[in-house]
Image: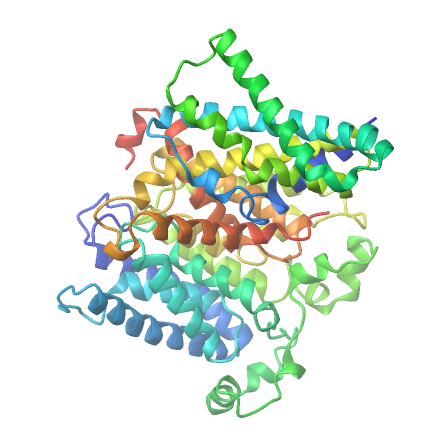
Length: 341
Length: 194
């Protein structure tokens, strides 16, 4: 349970993981407000199945099962997967994701503190590769907050998740990033007028802007309490902002979206503050973390702009995890690596 | 000739979205066979990139000029392997003549480079997919860059995937293949780059 997050204070690993889970709360509230009960159910299924798989893995390793069910780092991995999955997805999707994350992403490499890849993103990327259809079924956000999904009761949501009600197709819609990906020659202004998700929204699409604002708030809380440092998030957000500014070209049909759109859409903020700040799988040292963040930001923008996927944060994080030891070796030769740990 | 857009496109596609090791699974064993002396890894990557670039150009010319005029295209795999061996020997000759790096590991590295399936794979794909020798060469360069990214990153990752913390049944080859598999998942994110 060592070195989970930046241990600058004398908090234990469990306390730090608990604080990170608490910091997810504003983003979780915003997600639940816009997408209904599906978010809470996802998180619940993820936590439950993660604890089950963690127990299986520990018993396979013949470690003493002196295992408190409230191992918060496992719960944190589960919460991050649950928050990134589409709400109202079938129950087996989070279960498979958590099995891959815990068994392959974490315990195949020796468990807590030894994983070269971020377990949550291992699970998410595998799901995105194996079940692209289920993973793209995001619940539509209604600008007037009268969406069917938002009015679904808890019982109805559970019925949809376990597959007893087949009314799922009617309540899904394109996310802002998908709208930009499928833009067929429209100017950005026309795109904004045509789609209610932009025209009724504030600055980056109804719902998504508040979700990202929630995660930004949580991230700032983590920085203030010195659980994470500012280096990796500022590198990632800065590179996304600069790249989207370069490719903005004042809104032509080939434009990839404004900087404010890219910063407050998709998984930008949860990625910047909650995923790439995992010190085990990211680079070490201040300049290494900045370089790591810049690498993730460049990859995210590149994948959003030109690949088949509307948002490729999981892939970007995995590739950056793979390159992180190289960053450590060739970039971080400064004395500040120990000072800022 | 080649425009800068074509060149960038070919290099990005060959190095990322069609990465020879992680997407097309060619040359996997060569990217995982690391020398004892890790300092030699960047040199190996550089030499492999150079061999891929030069041999893809030479192979393309040889096929289009000689094999097609003699109607011997069905023998191209054999001739490609001979030409690759010649290119590798040329590299070995120059490296030894100018004493670029005097390391024992290159004694076993050069024979293995001749049978690197990625080098042959580039030549075979070039004969179907590209239009000119410039495109063939930039395709080879991109493939070499992609190979180098994987080789160098994998070598530097070694300290995280070796050691007593890895479960005993997964130590060595299995965990290396799992790591490569996860990287293959990650590189599938580049799918569709046009």
